[in-house]
Amino acid sequence: RKEVEQDPGPFNVPEGATVAFNCTYSNSASQSFFWYRQDCRKEPKLLMSVYSSGNEDGRFTAQLNRASQYISLLIRDSKLSDSATYLCVVNYDNAGNMLTFGGGTRLMVKP
Amino acid sequence: GAVVSQHPSWVICKSGTSVKIECRSLDFQATTMFWYRQFPKQSLMLMATSNEGSKATYEQGVEKDKFLINHASLTLSTLTVTSAHPEDSSFYICSTKMGNQPQHFGDGTRLSIL
Image (cartoon, rainbow over all chains, first blue to last red; front, side):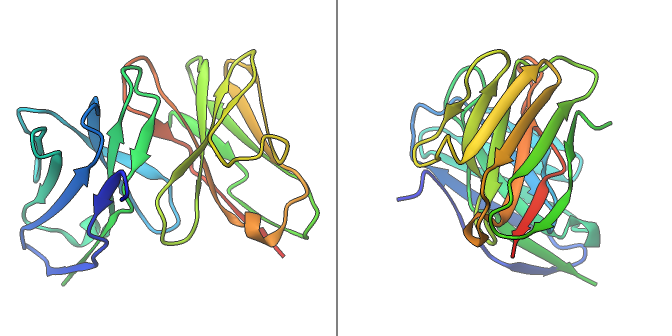
């Protein structure tokens, strides 16, 4: 079993749609959680951290359920520029050094 | 602005060549840098943690004699892929972090071994 699991997709959605991605992690001792965005042939870029209380940044909302070891990302009013691979990332140590990446979920937003 | 600069961005070379990749932290001192590798359609995998002034810590299955890491200053870590072969072709990415902030990644280096 992978430590961080994501549906690879692709999710094909029209512009303006709302789309949700899920991620599960296996290590209950995980400390912190992130969503990164990776464009084709580019480096990952931090989209947002995920907090236990849930957090929102514009059109993006992240949720964390520690009991179920489950993380989600909701994107509202999808834009063409949202097309990318979204990586669920889990950190296992207090220092933030040990990141484990999910395989990513690919999103394609169509006109 | 960019936090980490990685160079070169793309390398194509013959089998048996050694390739050096540089990772620089911009405007801050990085005592720790991380080296990842990503094969097509796969997730990033941590190869090693580079520590300024001491030996790097390698992940299980990563050959330290194959992937030489040098972190001689607080702003520069280098990864040298020695005697590279086609199976070493991959996307190599470095990262670092400032304090308790999340890791930021360099632009990545796409290595193609013919």
